[in-house]
Image (tube, rainbow, N blue to C red; front, side, top):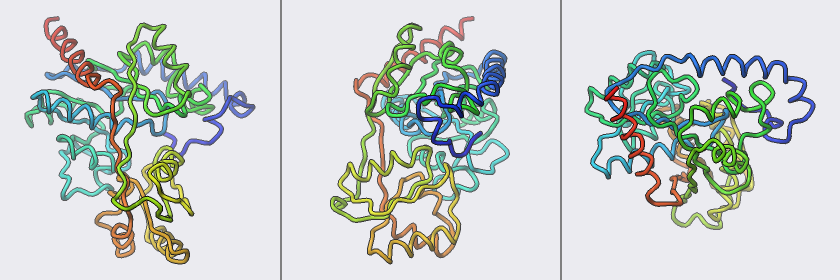
Length: 341
């Protein structure tokens, strides 16, 4: 998996994308076979997969959290399956949000655990069994659409409204994990997240394939009194530029921006550099919730950075209030039919 997508992936296909096209074709063929042959174990609970078509961030985590909270409101007991990108867990593990650290379980699971129990493991079938044994009766899988090891009752594909599918080429010439046609064959619904026209072509493809599509926005929750704050903004996420735009949108003034690779674990030097830069220019420090959890339980400099950093939280808000329930109901219906076969 590519940790940081090259910028040319997100623009119209140029000579670099076309020079890599033979390799993209080969990668696409392997991905098509993986989609077709993936061993999907049927577990004794409905499974919703929140996946995406490309590498990089698309808003899956806040969407998974929104679905988990809706499921809880419906009287269900949701659990979340995560691979724990960036962590080192080698066996199925239930996340303890108060004691686990990001280097162990990954950063996203610590955020997901705010909404529901989270099982971290590369073996999603084993993680599913762990959550079911824990009393969960609905499983939400964060990512894993292309290589699922469990049967998916509803595959929701999240597409970033601004970046869409980039240049449309598969890895290494573009950000696609498989061709759009191959992936759409296994999708049950498409969710456009954010503002922009980058996802419009994908939504048209979904409509042609007879797939329902939904829309959601990301609500940003800034600290009290943040408006007008001159700040140093840093982020190690799939699309740092989106976060820097968010800082401006909630009234902050990002004088300095520092971007790192997705899931980047900050070093003592990183923390010292960020603190020194902010102090030298009299700036406040602001980052994402996902970055903040990677600062917890760290060295002295990391702890100082964590104390100083203001956090902008985000949440997914569906355009149609009933959309999350519609998705969950569809997954439950699919599961019931599956149990009869």
